[in-house]
Image 1 (spheres, one colour):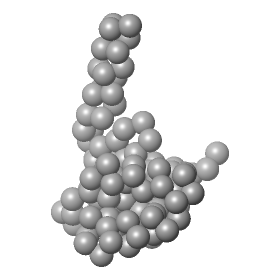
Image 2 (tube, helix red, strand yellow):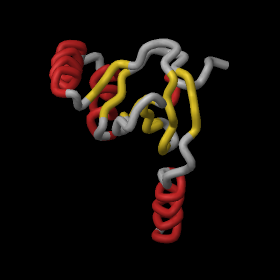
Image 3 (cartoon, helix red, strand yellow):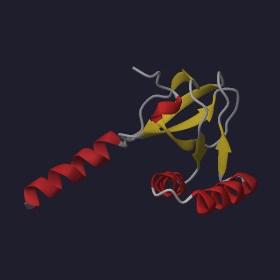
Image 4 (spheres, one colour):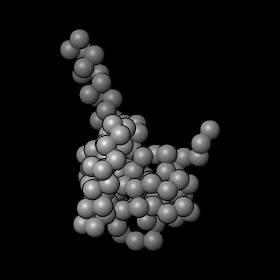
Length: 109
């Protein structure tokens, strides 16, 4: 069991290591947040059907600049990724990246 946990931990580190930034295009409007924990919390609220709590957290996070909404067709660079999220930044600037579901840049199959 300990070996299995170590293997999962090593895999998680490898998957989240930075890679060369790649140019991408937003294909589905989504939001992203500087802190991956905020993005994850927002999606957990959606999955739990907590629409009021989701709306309040998203509104305050957008207002504070912690999160942003991506518009269809925006050019972004993928700076880092995990299995489900990518850290995206606008290609036109030096913005910090925002952890966003990879579905924002991946076309539906």
